[in-house]
Amino acid sequence: MSIVLEQLIFNDIEKSWGNSDFCEQLRAIAASTDADFIVVAPKEEQGLALQMQYYMNNFPENMDGADIHLFNQNPAFLQHLRKLPDNEKYEMTSELMFLGEDEPKPVSTYLEQDPHMLLAEMGAYVLYKTSFLREYFNRVEGSVKLIDIFQQSKMIWKHRVLEDATEKEAVFTDYTVSEMVSCWSYFRELEDKYTTLSLELLDFDKNMFNYLIRNKLGPAFNQNLMDGKLVEARNGLEIFTDFLKGQDKRLVSALVSSGYFYIHFPVANYMMWQSDKLFVAAYLRFLKVLFDKTHYQTKQYYLRHYRRATNATYKAQGLNSIRPVAKCFNLYFEHESKNLVY
Image (tube, rainbow, N blue to C red; front, side):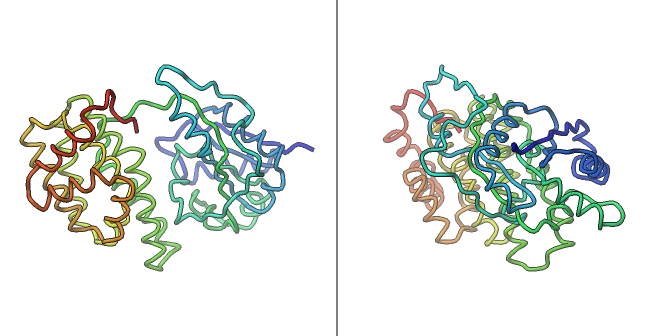
């Protein structure tokens, strides 16, 4: 017998995503539906729903042991996408074509490890077991928020199987550090009601910030560079520098998603900003703060993934000179016919 998935479209994401009104709608559909799982999305995501349905029907045992399921992209599929020519697009199918010979196995996760599960943009990727929701809403009194549901789940499983080839929304180049901090602080205040252990709170902080840097702040900074909007890029960089300067060294060291967007990408695209003295000064200041606030292990991480750019930027901040970056670009990146795509 097939597992049934019901998709609830929740349009009022600006004001109500995750709040008590949101949960009341979730309560209502859990009470009335015959579906085994519910997914709540800000818009209809038929392609994703069909792929998740395919996965559940073929691997039903992977859906039994958890109350909430987070679906992510299949790394093998992402690797295939990166190898496609620029003018070639992958046609998304309802079946999963990159599962390989081995049966996929979910891995357990928890809210502090993947706090971005709370965000509206992740709605289409999160499945709630209907029986869990019914049991939860039957025993809880008063209004609740989405974070309460996550915190009361006994198990969350993560499945890295999706092959999502839909066109992503354009990068919002005006995304700011203030917006990032505001998003984090809102959910951190809710998280404080459940967690007092400093290590778990650090997990929540670093993982939320890494997600926001990797998916919003970093791409916005890089896009401004590529568009020649150096004033906007510099302003954002200066505010990000001040943010890092005000944070604990443990947190800054944990923000490894900064490596690609703020170390590798600027070096690989040095020609876009080399003549702007104000940007050069801002970038050197950023590098000084970043490396002063970074533990040895994080520097090794940057070296492992972005060796040439990391060596150049580390020398640049030590000498307070952009020359090592210029030399690195001339040796390793100038010959490339196109810029790296994030």
